[in-house]
Every structure is written in C-alpha cells, then in structure tokens.
Amino acid sequence: VGNDGTGLFRRAFYDSIHGGIFIVSPNFTTDNAYFYRVGAAGDPPATVNLTATPSTVDEGGSTTLNWTTTNATSCIASDDWGGVKGTSGSEPINNITSNSSYTLTCNAVGEGLDGVDTAVVTVNDPNPPPTVTLNADETSVFEGDNVLLTYTISNATSCNGSSAPSSSFDGGITPQDGSQTVTNLQTDITFTLFCSNANDNAQDQVSVTVSEPLSYALYNDDDGNFGSGEVLLSNEGDLSGQIYVHVLPETDIVSVRYSVDGNNVGSTEGAAPYVLDGDDGYDSNLMSDGSHTITALVQTGSDTLTLTENVIINNSGGTIDPTLNVTLSPTSIEAGQSSLLSWDSTDATNCEGLSGVSGSLAADGNQTVNPTSTTIYEIRCTGNGGTVTDSATLTVTPPASTDNDNDGVSNDDEVTNGTDPNDPDTDNDGLDDGEEITYNTDPLDPDSDNDGSTDGAEVNAGSNPNDPNDTPSTTTDDDSGGGATGLWLLWWLNGVLFIRRKLRLNE
Image (tube, rainbow, N blue to C red):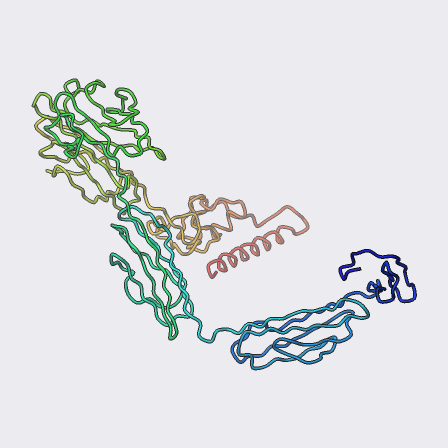
C-alpha cells in the first residue's frame, strides 16, 4: 500500500483496541504490514482568538495582545513575539517602531487539529506625504459662467493655486479643506493645486471647458442673404416690400412658428434656414404703417423659446403715429406715501400733462408724485403723425387709524374732540369715551345733565344721563326697606365701576 492509501493488499482487519486498521501485503511478510488510525471523533480542533488593542499606533507606541482559546493544551508565540504562552492571557507590547505581526499557535487536545491566529499592528508614518484633491462643480460651462472649485488637503504645510490661463485662483491657499468661486469664465481653463510639507509634495488638477452660449435671436435681411450681415428688425428704412426674417443660430432647432401682431403667419418651419419671407405672405406693403411685433416660437431639442422684435413699417414715406405709455409704480399707496410716474413715447416731439401733472414734459421721463387722494395722471404727446393720450390712476387710501386706549375712538378723533387718547374714560364718569358717543353724553363732563349722578351711574341704573329730571331711583314701595338697600347697592356698584376704570388706566 502506498503512502497515499492506494495499492494492492492481501488482507485488512480492524483493531478495536488501538482504534486502527491493519493492512497486510500480498506476500504476508511482517515488513509489509501497515497500520492506519484516524483521529478520534471525540477530539475537536483547537480554536484561537488573538487581538491587538489598539491595532494602529504611532512610532514608539504600545499595544496590548489579548487571546483566548478552546480545546487547546499549550500555545507558542511566533513572528514579532515569542515564547510559550498560556491558553488565555494578555500581554503588553511596547516601543513598536514598524508594522508588526503577532502569531499564536495552540496544540489541540488529543488528536484534534491545532489552532492558529495572527494580529497585525500598523505604525503610523511619522512624516506622511501631503494629499490633495481638487474638483469643479461643472467641467463644461458657457462663456460668462462661474465655476466652484472645492479641495481637500491633508498633511500639508503650504499650498499654492495656479491656472492656465491665469484667474483669481492663482496664489497662496491655506493648507486646509476649502472652496473658491472663479467667475466670468471666457475660455477653456485648467486649475492646479500644489501642496507640500518637509518630506514630500502632491498636486491635483481639474480642467473646465468653456463654450459659446446658444443665443437665439430674430434677424431681418430683405435681400435674402442669411449670413453675417444680418440687419436687426428694428432697423427702420430697410423695411419695404417683402421682409425676410431668420432665426439664428440654427443649432438644435426643431421647428419655428412665426406670428405678426399676435396672428400666425405662414406654416410652421421644420427645417433650416427657418425663414419667414414673401412666400409666406409676409409683405410689408400689405401692412399698415407704424409699429408691428414679430414673434418666433422656437422649439429646440430641450426647450421652447419665444423671440420678439419690433419693426416700423413706413411704406408711404409719410409720418408715423406717435405712441405713449403712462405707468405708475406702485399703483396704490397710503396717504403720505409716494409713487413713481413714468411715461415713454415714440415718434413724439413733445408732451404735456393734462391732469395730475401739468406743464410741458419731455417725450420720455418720470417724476415722483405723492397726492393725498386718488388721482388720474393723464399725459398727451404730439408728433408729426398726430397726437396720442394715455393715463394711469393712482389709488390713495387713508392711513390706518390707531386707538391707543382701545376706547373705540381713534387717536385723531380724540385730539379733535379734546379727549385724552391715552385715557379710555377722560372725565372718569364710568363711561368710555366711545360709550359717551353712543349715549350722546359729554366725554369731558362726568354729569352731562347736572342732576348729581354721573353719566355712568345713570346708564347703569337705567336713567337718562341727558335728562336732569330722570335720576336713578332712590325709593321703593317694598315695606321691607329694600329701597334703601337698592340705593346702597347702586352706590356700591358705582364705586366698584369707578375703581375698575381707574385700575384699567394704571395698567
């Protein structure tokens, strides 16, 4: 039988005493007899748990090794420590100067398998190199856009930013995490952040691509040439007969729909050069003289744009009617506040105020107004083509009234009436100044009818405070003497009412 357990054999039998198998070779010689024994089923493997706390230390630092085992009889330490160890324990390791490994191998009980575990301790680099990361919030922008640069820095003593071409990022940077915004980019640019310490250096870069923005605009060129010589639609004098309108640039356009003065003209243009010309029925000779608005509804691959230009049609060579727009900002104020009156005109030589404002005015202008009541501001402008009038209304509301003593009478009215705006009962007669108005009594006289009873007492008793012949009842037909009791109670109530009024004043 070979050592691998294969081969021819003559005889095999189990030895229960020794717990193994005897195998005899074909020639029955004793030299060729083999005995095999399998580990006993009752001998489990040894287990080892070895830890290092802490597992990372500075150069020259210390750690503590702790270990526990199961099914182990003895243990041997190896690698960066040594010696025979117990099956459990703790041991400090001092003055660690480099990364270290600590291995513990333990023998199992009986025929069980040995156990082993290793703990690793890492030593921090006393002089680590700097690290730098530099990022941009956008790496592709349009001309005039800004970019936000953010950076993280560690283990550096000095840092410097640079860019090509130069920018506000150039110069010294504090060696710590931070950010910086670079504004108004005009061309492709690369930013570099370089940091160093006494032992090493590091750098990082980020590049930003700057593109021309897509700027769609309406152009007119009445000779049909759509190139670099476009003429803006507002160019008067170039508009006679058929007018050619073109949307630029053609990049990313899906379709264009034109309208004149809010009315659709022609069909939707679905292919370049997106032209509205005489073939679409747009002929200035058929339009009235004056100002007109051309609008292009442009559908791009990702958006819908509305482009607008004004044109002046002057087919007859005659005069153009003036236009005028009068506005107020704001259109509603409280008395004492002000508003800005503005007016602008076209094709007018002079203007004048008709209401709200008077006298000769410039063709365009503004002025601050602060009327005390609602006012209509009307202006008329005159030009070679005639006159035009426009107006705007400024609504004025009185300021919110205040009532300091909460007696129902505003401060302004109290001053007018001669009462105290800070005393709800000026004459201390038991009636608020507002109640004096309700009962038509004199708020400055505690006994308006001079009958010896205060106005408040008369109101509480049900008598007329304005009639000297109507006083609070002091008699009764009740034989029990209730009249005297009622009079005493009335005096008592008046006193309580008077005290309540005074206390309220002192609050």
